[in-house]
Structure formats: C-alpha cells, structure tokens
Length: 163
Image 1 (spheres, rainbow, N blue to C red):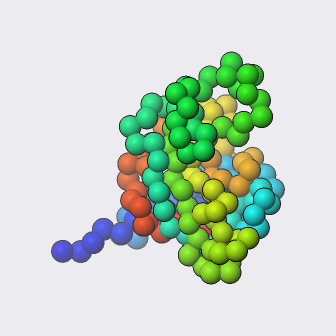
Image 2: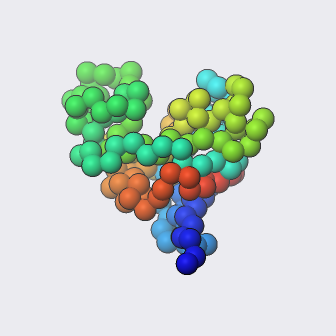
Image 3: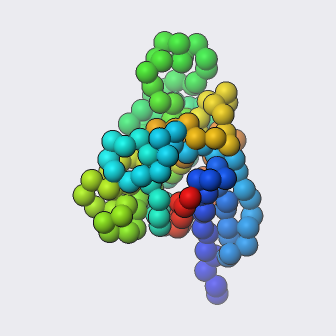
C-alpha cells in the first residue's frame, strides 16, 4: 500500500501557500508572511526560508477565532473590542501548525532555529490583509482556511518556504 504524502509550498513572492497530496495540487491559499521580509535570524521578525516540517499541530477542536498565547488557548474569542484592550498582541487564532527547520545551519540550530523562533502557520483576525506581507515572521492565514488545512495535514509533513 502506498503511503499518502502531503507537502506544503509557501511562496513569499506570491504570498500563497499550496497544499499538495501525492504531488497533486489540491488547494492554494492566500497568506501573509513577514513584513520584514525573509531571514532566519532569531528576533529578526522575518519569515525563514528552506525545508521545514510540521512539528506540532495545536488547537484541534477549538472554536474559530480562539485566541492563543504561548500556544495555549486563553479562553477568549477574538473580536475587535478585544484588540482595543490588548493592542500590543500579535493575534494567533484558531489553529497553530508549529514549524521546525530541517537544514542545519540554515533554519535549524543556533540562532537560526525556526522551531526555537516559534514560527507557525496560524489563523489571524478577519480584517488582516492576506496577499501581502504583514506578520512578525509567521505565516498568517484566514481562520476558515487554517482549519481546512489543519485537518488535511499531519505532523511530519514537509513545508518548503521559498522566495
């Protein structure tokens, strides 16, 4: 029996995430990567490039717009009034796919480690623009889209992030 292989490809220039199953394109999503561009250094606010893997899936079964802080649901559901109360937050909503780099010295290890930088694919408020850079390094998606993707992927699936 052949094993089903999922793969994600993130295009920084196109601001898209494409989901492949057994090398067949299944779905393409509009996303938002880092407003600071690409880069691998810790605290750069950049989106890391290269080969990655989904290390952890967080938030299964949580409601749309569930707010996460430190990868834990806060019990809050995002709404604009909550943003006014906590304007300093970088909103991580609904689901988290935590990425880990696979390329030692590029996106794994030392001050270049994607996992230690807490780089995720995650949901964001509905009024956040997709299709243009705006995140603090993560890959932002619409909440409905991240739920759909979350349900199709597995821990261990490969993610290529390129320009």
